[in-house]
Amino acid sequence: MTPEPTHRRRGLPRTEEEAAARAAGPQPAPAAPEISVPTEPEPVVTQSSGAKAGAGAPAQQSGAEPAPHRRRGLPRTEAEAAARTSQPQQAPAAPAPAEAVAQNTEAPGTGAPASTQQGPPAEAPQPPVVGLPPDKPGRRRGLPRTEAEAEARAAETDKSSAPPASEAKPARQAPAAGTKPARRTGLDSTPAPAPSEEPQPAPKDTTAPSPGLPKTPTPDTASVPSDLKTDTPQPRAERGLPAGGTSTEPARTIAGRTTRQWGVLAGTGAGGLVVLTTLLVAGAQWFLGTETGTSFLADYPGQYAQPDAPGGYPWWLNWAHFFNAFLMILIIKTGIQIRTETRPQAYWTPRWNTKRKISLTIWTHQVLDLLWVLNGVVFVTLLVTTGYWQRVVPTSWEIFPNAVSAGIQYASLDWPTHGEWAHYNSLQELAYFTTIFIAAPLAITTGIRMSGLWPTNNQTLNKAFPVETARAVHFPVMIYFTAFILIHVILVFATGALRNLNLIYTGQETTNWTGFFLFTLSLAVIIAAALATRAVLIAPIASLFGRISR
Image (tube, rainbow, N blue to C red; front, top):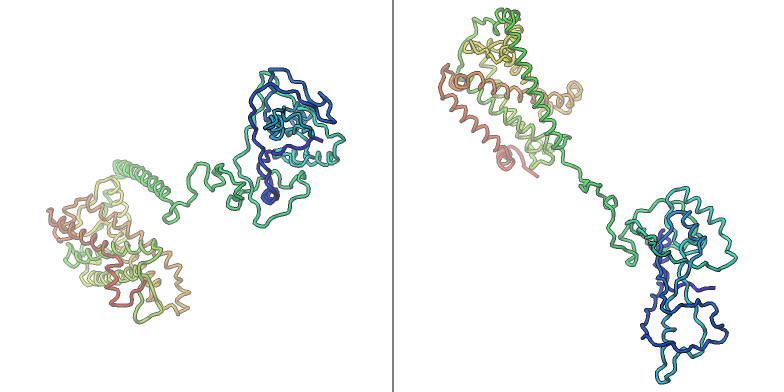
């Protein structure tokens, strides 16, 4: 029987058991290098005993070189493997071993060739034959491509379990002249599976198909032995990266939306607002140009008669208006900060209740609320005692059709500004009444429910006014105040800035720059106060009423 070659290309292990068996088993010795022999006339070689001249050795023609051995690669289909097995294969001429080369050279000091010495004949090792049936151990056939192929291999293994009758191997045929042998495209870049930490026993039957053979296990390069590791880069999917190369790190969100989503939402809203405003202006101008619109405007000019209401703007009204704007801006700013704050910079604990602990931002918000409530109490008291309440409290049902008329005039860009020194138009009156007597009380009530002033131990009050309801109402009220301030400032500048600012800050119905200068000064004070509401500046003030901690 022809001996197996000394060195075979083993390839990557297919299972963890095979990797462990290779790591535990002895490593094959590398093939001995060939020794170059100077070209000389070959001496007559005396045949050894038991060997017949010319038997088993092919006759070589002078000047003809043997065909080089080419590696054909693994069969890719069962049909290709059967075709290779059925074809006679011609074994290439094996290189002479190092011992034979040494015998062919002359022994030093004798002058006779070493080949004349008697010795056992050495058979040339046969190269591995590609395409053998799967019952031969150690043959690599490649992974099955489908489940049907895996089942076919298992059935073929059962049929060919018996050893063959003859060990004769057909000679491998050399490729025909002018044709290129099949090239092996190579294996996938998936590294070999890592063996487990504990050595596993070698499998008894290496040819038996594994149940999970069609699936390649996920490699763990950290536990692969050093002799099995490969420098082949891993695919992007195995490194945890998507095909595009971007990181899977989640994007930052603001109130549940990413920056891109907020940008798209803002752009869509702005575009829709422009379209809606354009349609509204065009529709209002068209309606007032009709006979029906002209008649409606004559019957309801935008305000009803209030002969007993006092006129003008007293000084206390102007100061209350400034303090209200100053405190409201700071309240909205700290309220938004409370909703977006994840970790407060400092905490405040009252001296009279050491068990209660709130963030310094909430303390600032509640202090501003108390000052705003105090200013509102003074303002409402002066409204009632001076009779100015008639300018902000509706006294006739005619206010509703006149409010619609004033709204149409605003939409048509024909501002209803006549008679403001005496009293507001009906739309202004409804807006001020809603702000002073509806929105402000809702903000105060819901704020107290969420603050430490609420008696939390009173179960009756807690059931009558749950804190969840207070939170659901408090935030929309803040949105209302924000929208009211924006619309109020826009209309002040759109309907005559110098005249309106003088009415608000000086109480005079004149057109000069005095009111604008006072407005600029007050705006600078509000911005400075908004920037000063920081923990490093608020903490010393808060420490006068409680303990500051982190």
